Length: 193
Image (cartoon, rainbow, N blue to C red; front, side, top):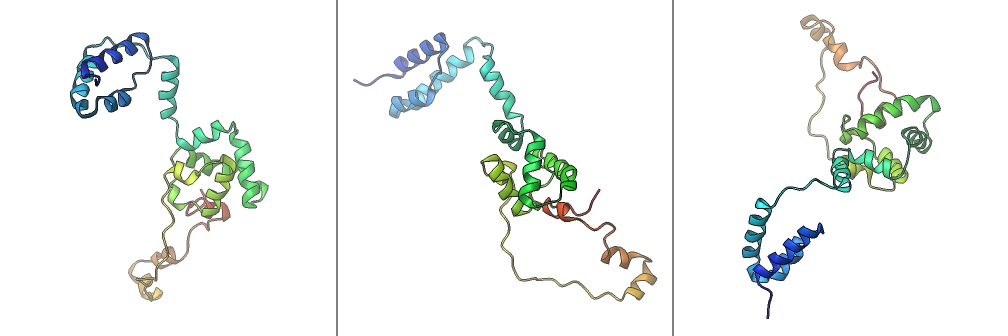
């Protein structure tokens, strides 16, 4: 004889009373073709059941959801920020005086303040080895686009003519105000701050 939705609800109420996990999915599976009926009974029970204070474990879990994924990954490896930065500098073959800039850019990346789409593949590979996880996926970075033939060409401006129309505009278009360095390029930042 199969178990009725009322019997399965009684089982759920017993678990709820004892403070055990409710295992709703398992109960719905056991209800078989009557799972919709059981789902309605469970919804009604939970709407009327007194609210409980969450356990410290449940609260800790919910608080981790607010933590950015790259930060969680670093913390789970018990890596201090400076240790991770030192590993990045070494792995990427950067000079030691680049540590401060790498630290700033990595922190911005870790906190979701730097667009992960511009970060170089070599940085993602280095982070994966340091974090033991796919850092690109944690940061929500898209996969690199496959290169395609150029569809548009830069126009050949007559700089003298352009200067007469808008003085200095030609220079602004052709000369960046600050040339990005190697760290800027690795983290997809167009110019140094």
